[in-house]
Image (cartoon, rainbow, N blue to C red):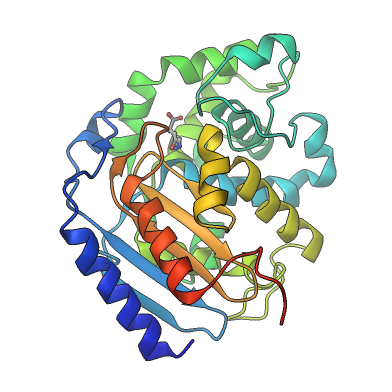
Length: 313
Ligand code: DON
């Protein structure tokens, strides 16, 4: 794929998306997210050769919300290794992102690290006895280093709004604490979780931060090994099977790549060996995943023929 071709395709996708009128509903349960215009649309593709192609609103930071779970999982695996899987499963839940139903019959062990319950356990691991702000500082530095951009920040207004409205997340944390799967004061674990969800990145920054998942765990820009090849593959496997909650099957069916969504309307998708792609459109489909984001990734992967199911030639 020539660079100019790819840029042309991205520009055409942006133009096509501009005219779509059915854009989904912007998440309104976190008040600051409700104010974001559904007209926004950005896309960035960071390729293995170090280039990053951008189009539309790709330089505007947005709340990455659950896309942050990819980075917190990566950091938690670095902190405690495979022991993480004693506290979290690796199965798709088939349930919405904030579901509590499976926790009772499964003794407080969340199905996977991407549903809220699993990501809250990941936050509990990352806390490691520290103050939530200190743990968030370390996670922020990690994301900044992946994107090679120290302007990435936590939007504290979003984090405060999440704290005020996050009763269901508080229920999940308290319930898992009762099962012995949350080790800290649930308020501290939730503070870290709300802050990580409030990370603000542009599509360009997000695509760059995902580059280590293109290359079996090595940052293609610096040659620095972020995770082992096995771990990079497992993170991608979880993104494919669990990254869109009860919409994961449809995303794999339509896009054919590992992907992780957030209620801010962002999606990070990985074409292994080829590119890290970030797309942002704030309107969500009925399963809480970006409506136009999914549509745009479907268009892009069809046009450039990227799929993990494509046979090697
Ligand atoms: O826990 C929440 O409600 C949010 N901070 C994150 C949810 C989210 O992004 C779910 N993904 N689509």
